[in-house]
View 1 (tube, one colour):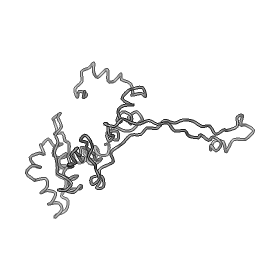
View 2 (tube, rainbow, N blue to C red; view 1 turned 45 degrees about the vertical axis):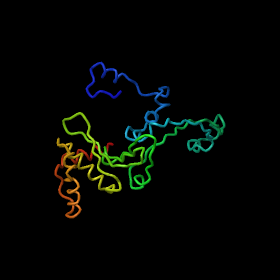
View 3 (cartoon, rainbow, N blue to C red; view 1 turned 45 degrees about the horizontal axis):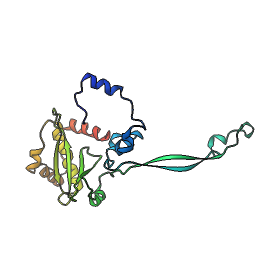
View 4 (cartoon, helix red, strand yellow; view 1 turned 120 degrees about the vertical axis):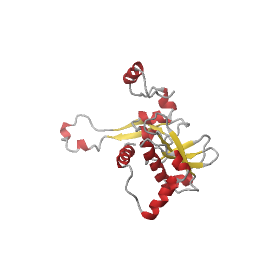
Length: 224
């Protein structure tokens, strides 16, 4: 169940009283996202995990050698009451399959899986490569028009049709237009966004049309 954007007072109170996820939570053992969150990874990084694959836990034995610790070098040997030992101990490690960041190599080598998945990019946020189980790959961008609660999605094109950097530029323009309260879908459908990109290639970058919005999206990308 998805969390509500406008929770009631009782729901908000329950959320505030809810403690951090612990190792006994079944989600840690069954969901790769929550396994990474339990280890302290950020939400943005944990979202890259393949959640259809359960996380793996394996135990390794490590040799904790205390004889070479730095803090013993400045200690008088007569003050050491117990002789340092090399103590074997066990360490539980986590194994999770995580999607890499989106780049040219990833776009070329992204393999289909049993279910559709998306490789998200760090910049701009909401931009990614969708890979269907049939092997068809497409660039997509998610956006939310200012003043609306629902999200929209635009399929920018296939890697065979547009380069990665072109798709990245189009995705950023889509998010800028949506942040200003306009619907970017008609502009993409009639080709205006692509014309603007080609115009900039010929004439060079134009001054930002929405400088305040672009600064806001820059801060959003940095915190992603």
